Structures are given as C-alpha cells and as structure tokens.
Length: 171
Image (cartoon, rainbow, N blue to C red; front, side, top):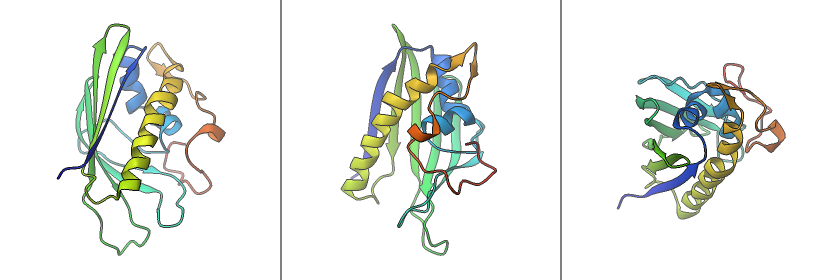
C-alpha cells in the first residue's frame, strides 16, 4: 500500500510569487531549511539543519521536473547518521501551482513514505502544514517586483537550529 501526504492551500499571492518562494534559495532558507537549491532538472541539492539524536540533519535531493511557474518535482532522502548505513529509497515531493480567484492554489504531494513509521508521517504532515500555511505566507509578503527580500522569517522563528550549517548553503 502506497503511503503519501497531501497538503493544499490557497495563498492570496500571484502564482509567480509563490513559484519564486519555492525556488529561490534565500526564500527556501527562511520558510524551510538552509539549502543549495537551483531550479534546474538534474540538479542535486541539500536541505540541511543541525542533526539531533538519530537524525543527521542532511536531506539529499534531486530536481526531477521544473515547469515554471506551474510544477516542481524533486526527490528527498534523509542521509543516515552513519554514512555506511543503508539508505532508504527517496521520497518524492511534487509542488503544483495553479491560479485561482484571489491568488494561487498550492498542492504538495509527498510520496514514498512506506519506510516511515506512523509517528514520523504524522509529524511530517503537521510540519508541512506549518511550513505552507504559516511560514511560506510570511516569505511571500517579502516578495516585491519579482524579488525576494530577506528577513521575512527571523532566524529565531525558523524551524531549525543553525550551529553547524556548512558555508556552501544559503542560510
């Protein structure tokens, strides 16, 4: 049985601005995690936070589809704490944007969750809800004339620790 998550929200912002918030490294760092994302098919990138307990904090991703400003698809696999440990199959995140009256409908579908326990899936569902319903709109308020201005989500309000984030990632 396939296990997946789906989150849907209507954001009162133009589709192009929502796309920008999903694909600009500085914006992603504020609403999600530090990263080295590029909206290019085949680009391998990391979303990374400080690790805790059995979580390395490293999420390895690869862009599979990029159709601006409509659809973005990438894989996501959490790197194990032990680099010699086996890796799970990657999950896939699909972001679909469509214009609606009063803004943009954003749909997130995350598949490939079969290897995760129910509590982890529940936690992810709650987390994605917070990211796209609370933090992403904060970032969207800082997009003006097609440019994202940093400072929408102060570091102390973000959902991650930042003590050991590598210099090659946008923070």
